[in-house]
Every structure is written in C-alpha cells, then in structure tokens.
Amino acid sequence: MQPRRPFGLILAVALAVFCTAAIAASPVPAFTAHYRVLQNGSPIGEATLTLAPGANGTWTFATASRGTAGIASLLAASTREVSIFKWVGDLPQGIGYDYTMKSALKTKRRSVRFDWANHSIDVDDNGNFHFATQSGVVERHTIPLALAAGLADGKNSFTLPVAVRDRIETQHYAARGKQQVSVPAGTFDATRVSRTDGGDAFEAWFAPAKVSAPVKIDQRGKNAFSLELESWSSR
Image (tube, rainbow, N blue to C red; front, side, top):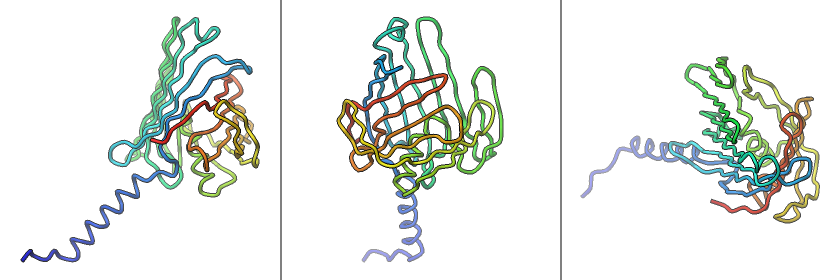
C-alpha cells in the first residue's frame, strides 16, 4: 500500500502548478509575423516580429528588420530589437530590452534594464541614465503588445507609463473604432488605436479574432515608418 500524502502537501503542489500556469499565460498568443516596411508610402524593407514563451514564465518579443530598397538597401541597414518580459495582468512588465542598428556607416545600440527588487531602471542610450520605476511601466518596444492585450480585455483607452531615455513618460492611447484595412496579407476589419497625448503620432490596427500580431503600424515623427502585414503563423 502506498503511503497517503498529506492534504496540505497535495494542495501546495496543486497551487504551485496553478501559479506557474498563470504566470506563463499570455493575453496575446505567440506568433511569428512578416511585414513590409514603408517610408512615405514607398517600400524600403522587410521586418519579422516574433512573440514566444521563454523560461520561468518570461516571454520574448523580437523585431528584426532590414533594408531592401533605396538608401536603406545601399547602406545595408538592419535593426534588431529584443524585449524580455513577464505578463502582469494585461501589461508586459519589462525585464530587459536591447536595440541594435547596423549600417555601412555606423552601429548604434540601446538597452533598458528593469530592477524590480530595487525599483529602478537603467538605460544605456548615448549615456547612462538611472531612475525609479513605477507600477505598470513598460518600454516602448512592447507598446503594441500592451495595446493588443488591453483590447482583448475590453479596454478602449490606455494610459501607459513608458520608460524612455532618461525618465518615465506617460503616454495615452485610445481605440477609434473599427476600420477596414487592406495590407498584403488581405483585408481586415480591424480596430484602430492611436496616440492621443500630443507625442509622436502613432497608430496601430488590430484584428485579434484573426491574427495575434498587429495588422498595421504607422509611426510618424522623427523616425517615420509603416509596417504592413504580409503573412503570419501561430507558434
């Protein structure tokens, strides 16, 4: 006869399994998505966005892009961004972020590190910056994930504290209703979300019933570009 396990031990194991599953869960399902990159309406490159689970309840969100036309092609320009984070509710709580841009002329790097135990953020971006964190803060690469997760949770407006170069900047976004959007991957009835606080203009379109990844992203201002979905797959 096998010895009976104490009920307390069984309950502890069950809770541990449940908590692990809860931490690992993602309000935005994993995906790989391919995009064409445009500037002023003209194709200049291609990009791949990947969201995948990692170890110990973490998630990795990566963007890799390269120039295929115009000056971006001539300079062999490419960028890679990688965010490591954990989901806390419908917000991607940052652990680390790395950005690398390479071209024939230069290489540029930027990094963000979150120390939640000591409530601090360290940014390396043409200088080192150290400032206090706050609840709900994200880094700018994961903003589309925060918007997608918020929409899935029924939100229509978003207030996001965002870690920028030397401080936390409060950014506001709002859903603007449904809109038909045509991209190389097809035509989608998508929800348009735009930034509303007067910062660099940003719009993104989401159709979560069909695809986890953004259908289209339009960033204007100093670094203007558009991403239009070409294909995607669930991971």
